[in-house]
Image (cartoon, rainbow, N blue to C red; front, side, top):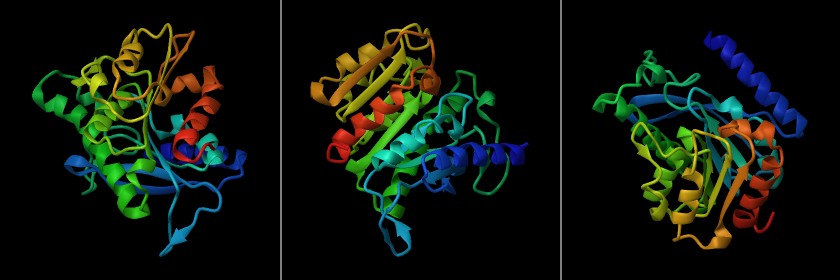
Length: 267
């Protein structure tokens, strides 16, 4: 099953890259927290400078999928970000897609095995934030991307994880929240809104029962951020997370443009 998943992933992402005349992505693995082995893909815009045979992108967007989904759900956004000059790192969160083993290669229970509200299972979800921090640190160390040029983007529970790390690590370029929820398995976004201090892009469906008033609350409470550096996009339907891309293609233009204006000299 993992082989067929890998083939599908390669095909989807390769097609997205081909459509935008960009190189195909580079598969990689990163050690997450608690010894999880995280599988991801790095995409680079054209003409990225290299040093010691490693790329040195000007800016990077790290993408965290929503619950039960994998990195392929960001395929529509990848070429749009590449066109703006961003490198893109997408990865499967712990217990999702290919990320179902430890660094020792031993299989681990997937996300569906962690749905109880006890300390052990809640620690699994808190680990999403720690994993994201590890991925960000990997990018800084390996590709020398300045933290202020790194964007964290997350969908649904991934948005909650992104917001949590953005509060812990304010030395970031921006945070993108697609359909954040109020509190999922201990990842409480409503408690974090007043603390976030990085440029903030929030998007959600207006009829999305999973988000309700959470996007507006986060946006309104984020008073540490100047109004010109935070935005809220509400779309009319009930689409959730990365499903917004297909329903509202304007988001695929609005988001990269907004990020480019803040991180890449108005691109």
